[in-house]
Image (cartoon, rainbow, N blue to C red; front, top):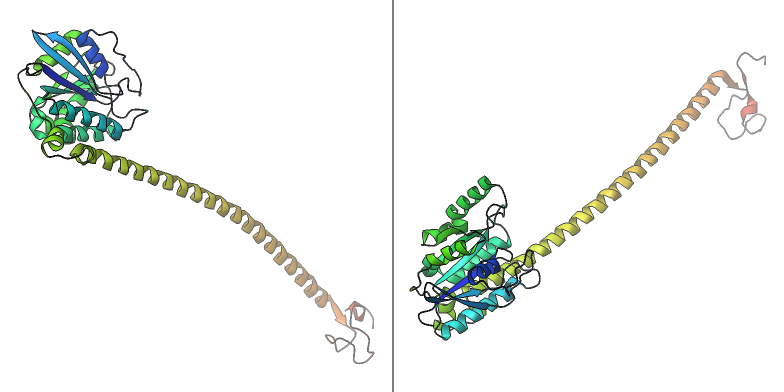
Length: 311
């Protein structure tokens, strides 16, 4: 395989890796997915002849898959990279696919891009082809703007293109797919950073820069999920407290109303008492005592008379 051209195809689930390989090889047994579930769970190789050379396209599992974690997918890719390198197989190029109709790169897509850079290493960037897929599925002006951002933004492809990576457009045709492969130098051989770490430096899969980043991302994702749950629980508690406050406010309003009515009633009684004393005079001069000192009778209403009544 020394003179063979070996090209790895990578990217998120659903970006068109299997379609690209199917267009090139003409293989009808390659299943093409259209959702979030990767049709490739293991690293697979597909061989074909092109311009008198034997080509091998290495189809890798898609990241951000529904059923497999990014950590498991990274391990599968690392195992293949190690075993192939030990067997004397070297890559001529790496094609990284991206769906241009995606409005923005964020979250898992950005993490996958960072992992890819760590997997390859800066020395291998000149052998990387960054191909955009699904052109014409959204607004053309928007697609061209996204392409410009991808190529120029240092957090996206900017760092890679500055190191020699080439950005290309990939259409859904064999002609376009072969045009992408023609950019790969058939006589060029590249060793990825992950291969150097595993074989030359003797690191385990878990200790490679790519795997450590994925593990950290997964841990960060777990922490973020936990934070989300905590925020949701806090929000639920806040809503319950707000509801309790509303209920207490209603009770306070009822209590205030009762207190106001009681106060009004006391005021009415006080006014009645005042009006009564204003229009009546006690027959006993010792009014206010429990018993009349003269007649020893209990002081009550009967002792009062109208001021204009005769004695």
